[in-house]
Amino acid sequence: MWNSEPNFLTKANPFERFRIGQGAGSWSADPAQMKVNAGSQFPVEAYDNFTKQIVPRWTTTDNAIIAAYTALVDKMCPCVLLFHSQAGGFGFTVAQARPGKIKAIVAVEPAVAGDKAQAGNLKGIPILVVYGDYIPLDSRWPKMRQIGLDYAEAVRAAGGNVDVVNLPEVGIKGNSHMLMMDKNNAQIADLIHNWLLDKGLTE
Image (cartoon, rainbow, N blue to C red; front, side):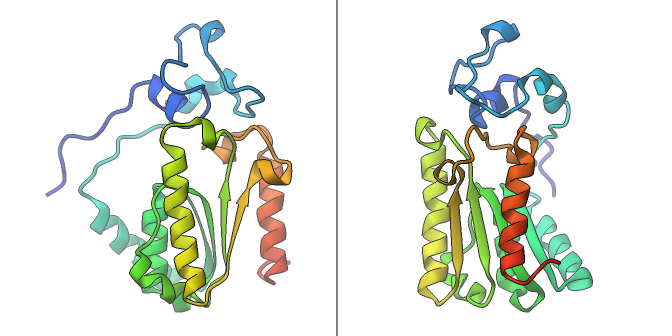
């Protein structure tokens, strides 16, 4: 049975949690009072429209999601998996179950990693993991990034190949958790495209 009580977010929550603002208390209904991270690339002027796209997260449908995801991979792949945030838990899980179907994995700020005990299943799959800016300033993201780094190390220890890119370290700065919505998203798309090109996976 599906959980009938979804987790609804407040309007302030993504602003403070996705590293758009400067942590707890940084959101304000008055745009002039918002405390945005210095140099942020997120289009704060469109924040209201962004919050209209947010949907509830049911916490008891993971098995159904993984079953549907696996069926899609079985039907459509071989392919490259690109996923973001909480989808890391789904993407890595499905890739571990169907490694022969996956040409590469691009994990954009995965908030959840795969099962380290099954990390060896991905040893033949090139993996790119991308993280944005302001992570050291946040209360939650250093721990979540470490989960991803630990999983990457488990894949490497099993003989796999994982490239981790921290965008500020390569000169791409100001990125929130919502990298694909930030104003410099084309730079990040180019980085991913060039990585895929280097792996012989795009023309």
